[in-house]
Amino acid sequence: MNALYRLIGIRKSHGQRTVLAIDDLALYPGKLYTLTGANGAGKTTLLNLLALLTPPCGGELRYEEEPVRWSNAALLPLRRQVTLLHQSPYLFDGIVFTNVAFGLKLRGIRGEEKQRRVKQALELVGLPGFGQRRARELSGGEAQRVAMARALALEPKVLLLDEPLANVDRATSEYLEGVIAALPGRGTTVIMTTHDPEHPGRLGGELIHLVAGELACRI
Image (cartoon, rainbow, N blue to C red):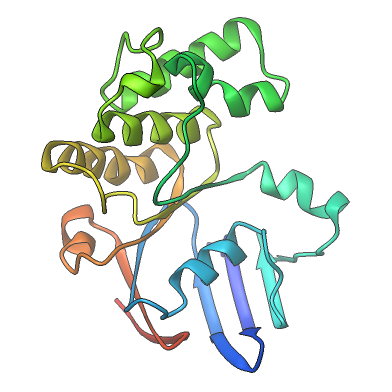
């Protein structure tokens, strides 16, 4: 199986400090990876690199075995295959439907296809019938589910999650764990950061552990 991502001699620095130093790492399609490490270990930096938002200072990133070219024209079609969900996602004022459909609108997806995707995404996160609810009236757990639905509506090939379960109630966490664990079976590669050492076992994913920006272990 060809790798989806391959990192070769990757280096990323902030000033004089090296925050990411990965000599060789391959990530494969249709899998779930949990990325662990202490604060400052380089987890978010790695996610931003995989999201094709920030280039490395050295080394090569390959996507589907092709070197990534860091020009806007080359990056646009690749970025449309990858969605990054931040730890504290922002919801716009207005109704839930509009929030979930936001990325679809930017990509020119309208009409019945937009309706289908929004409905399906809300059902996936356990919020059927929430389309007309006001986003500002949602609980924290509901807001996180809506943010997840917005990401899923794009039907990304790769879903990058930055601590998606860190600030939600137990019921929401357990439900979203189930959603995340099922995504590889639907063809989505998932890479998520977490501070919970039990997540790799519960989610059935592979563990990648970073220490001071370096790959410490992979299980």
